[in-house]
Length: 239
Image (cartoon, rainbow, N blue to C red; front, side, top):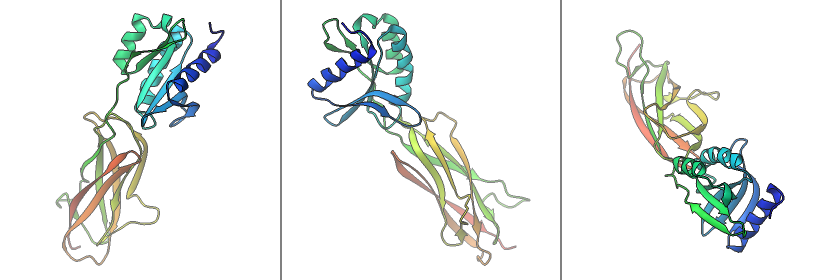
């Protein structure tokens, strides 16, 4: 019925359009990844990889799982001829949470297996004080010295957080230079296990700061996750 993968993909696009989807082809997503088809309907964005042979379907299931974690799509499907939707294909799709869209010999679309929908990225902050010199308390700093915080960032959502930034918000006695170490960036942060993304942050303490306890806010943001803030306290000790 179809002479090659291009004709097969054309048929899938026409069938999706007839079913009420708004369809785009060859859509670039994060990094160097590219989607064969992006179909949108009723506020839901579905990515599809189209393959015309059994090995290509298996390979694209792995690719589709990686794209499913990105914020550009809500669902991911691999589409191919129904005759190639073997038990191995179905089992791997179920294991990876990727949906299957099959095309019958008559050219009809059959949604064989539903795609998993992942929870949005959700960032939380943790961390600890850097170990000071001598016998000073861990949260002790000196006027003219540096406040250092070893930040730990967790992503508790299913989606990958993109363009993540963890940073200090200097105020009061705390200042950050133009070329600052008070802000660190990470392009992608996938779902975290027990090990967080760690980043060392530091800013300066004004030389004339009186002795006392001062708050310093630490924050984390991402393009697709709510901001999270934490406040830590530093004790300024006289020199």
